[in-house]
Amino acid sequence: MEDSEKKIRQEDCNEDTLGSGILTLTNKRIAFDKTRGRIADFSKKIGETVLDAPLSDVTEVWKEGRFIKKVCIKVKTKEGEKSYKFGVFSNGRWLETLQETLEQYKNQ
Image 1 (cartoon, one colour):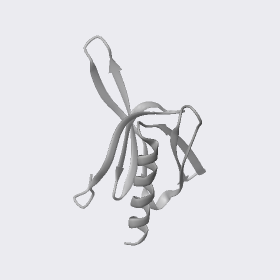
Image 2: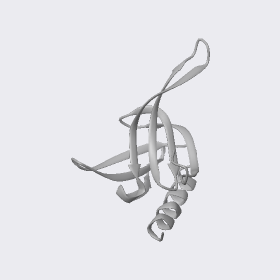
Image 3: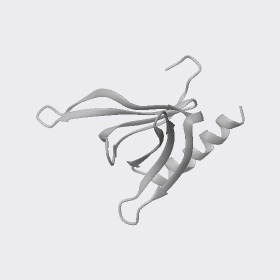
Image 4: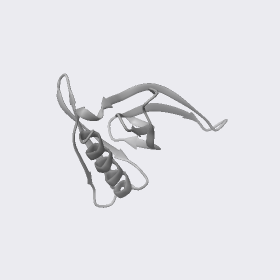
């Protein structure tokens, strides 16, 4: 993280296509780092960063799902827009935090 970057929210979660990892929201970007866990010794290792998008590239945030609820984001990439769906513990609070952080970022 940069010196001026602050971690706002972080959670161990699962993304529909990427699998398990850690979702991190800062005042400048959103990132998802893959993780691998071993049951034998209860260890968890952080792998590669598969999503590292500046907040300026986040075009939409929403939540969806009836029984298994997800917080979703749409990000601009070189290939176009890509959607990610994260199974977080409190998707309502995540959505609220994402919306507030994006609003603050745009108003800087």
